Image 1 (cartoon, rainbow, N blue to C red):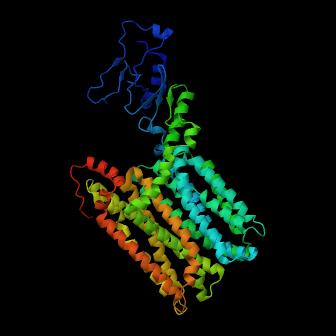
Image 2 (image 1 turned 135 degrees about the vertical axis):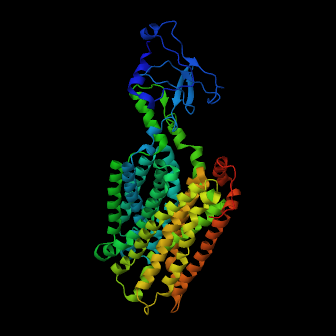
Image 3 (image 1 turned 180 degrees about the vertical axis):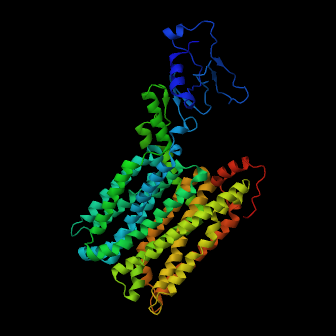
Length: 577
């Protein structure tokens, strides 16, 4: 029996992994091979949409086959766009071509990508903190107050908060790789007006820092890459790894900054940022491929057309014009949604407030460590090294979270229909770690006296570091699960709170500590911060026990709750695990 040339070619070279599909019946074109087919040969049969197992409205083509030619069926999730007349465009999707997605990368390739992204995220947070070690030199060189130079650190963090949200929608539309490349390039360029500022150029420094923060893509893109490569049930380990880079980058700056400030001119705090940024940009460009699903499907469709396997298949974004990219209404919607959720959603507000306040403390400490460790006559280098306990705490918290992830996975597998097991159990470890924040602040506060050994406030910093990492990781994990398709907006609100509060409190750090006078001024100032953190920790317990009822009043959270309820006949929502 003779088969049309296209089917024979596909059967021999593509096998069963590539399915030729269309919503319209196959009609052989007029060709010598087709004319050679016997008139009595059975014609392709179009089955009824109502047949068992078929999706209504779909047409399935049954093609005579032998051992070398697989049966070709229309996948139900193909999309078709009518162009003109009988011409059609077949739009491939994630369901029809999963082999093209980043999910199919090897484990080694995925973790190579994660390692580079770890360095990229570290460099972005490194930029926020190393600047502090150049402030004294800037104040002297430009004859301005110390508080004016602090503005450069604060404005970077504040614009960073908006920059993360600004870049995220474009990474969804244009792809992660080139959006992140553009972000890194612009951040590196913004180092130049700061490092090359003229003798009267404090304005140049502030403008360069403002745009440097605004151009930083940050966690909104890097965390999106985790979602690109790992299914929802496998994201905790890579997520914990990337969170470590996010919090760790902010304390690497002061650790090495003491040496830079002591032995080099203030400009080197910026040149080192630029050198680090250029290195990670090159590594990212060479070693990290695109991971965004729509972009990968576009590339796969172009490959199929270029190879002449299928001439009428297109990716989901190929039909979009640049006008649609430049004026997309959906991008504005996505950009506004994180702020809407941050204001309207109590869960997002409380957990983001806790996460933001915890992170802001680190940047307040960068500004206040000198006040504290000056009591023991620490040098600039020694004050920088005092941040090592926080770095140790981050690594410790990361290692402690690994068995917690295993525990939570096992619990979800054992209780597939329990809301509390699926969602609030992710906050279980936070109930033990979050109290470390006020405990650490109180230890740091009341051991900041020369009568106590200097290692005591560093022990307090270990508690603060463990709490900061765990708060960030647990809140993101919970929001991803609780808000489903809206998780990107929920976690974006978390990131916005962390950066924005860090910027605001960085600027107010010196005035705040200066407002407390007397022998116990420092102790009182940090005790007030501990009191604020206690309120947020109590709110965490409320969410853990009252989360199901709070989510039922949320239209965003209901989208994922509905999905869960479909898979379970009964959901004991009040059960606490």
